[in-house]
Image (cartoon, rainbow, N blue to C red; front, top):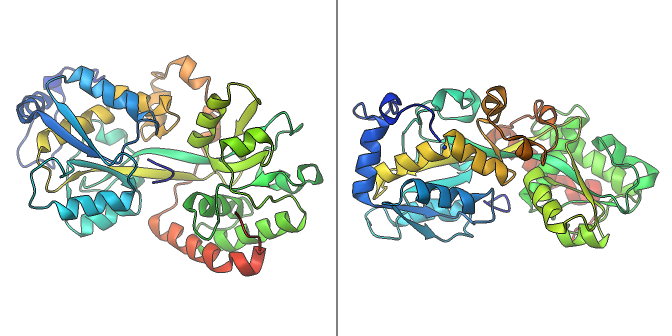
Length: 367
């Protein structure tokens, strides 16, 4: 995954489940059936990713009658897909009930008949462009491309991509991997290309390559795979990465060195993950209840506390239900307002441009 990777206000009886269900079910009906099943099998959910450890514990506390069987916590989206395929006829402990996968995998899994449609009670507050109309998959959380800055070494914190070309940032700017292979790095280039007016897709990739070629020629680009350690040690004082990774790294440093996380003022790019229920789920009602929990305010805030912006973030902000101490740990909410969510097709076209042109246009070998 991308480095991988609710409390309901109304009464249970008042919240109707999706019209996608075969028959009208209340949340109370689903809860009763889920408790009877007694188990939920998840896959590829590391506890240190997006606050999942606390989210899982929250679900267990709310529904102690349901045991959670966690498969392959460090697995990838592709691993999740294969686990469903390999266990179509298996109702045992190796068959996942639910998945959390990258955006591109949602439509793919739907087309292959691997997902069971279900619309959570809070369905209407999920943005239309980030969910399947039939309820097969739906966005869960997202990250936004940002700059992580070691303030001990960087006197003036850059506010936008164009700033990184300034002479004062010589030998300071890095990515989190080789742009020919790292999705996070590929999308960082997309963000930089969009900041130059490039349309999401092939054009953003081409303009992003031009930007990094200039950055490299100026001596500002550092061809080193950046991590929290390289930022702290000063090898990569400025790094472009997903905000949730940078915010977690910042906390891990405990102020030594002090680190800023900044959303660039242009080319603001979001990367989203999606949830779905396996069409072959051994515990379909527990799966539905899990989704209801994840998409309630409690579950959404659980992800936000882990620095992944929940898909209902704008709704939570508008209703003022996010604790101030949580908001204080994040960049300003307004910085996320312009975030663009590229389609699967746009990401694919950008990736093709970046991976195909990096060697000839930029020519830096990231190690």
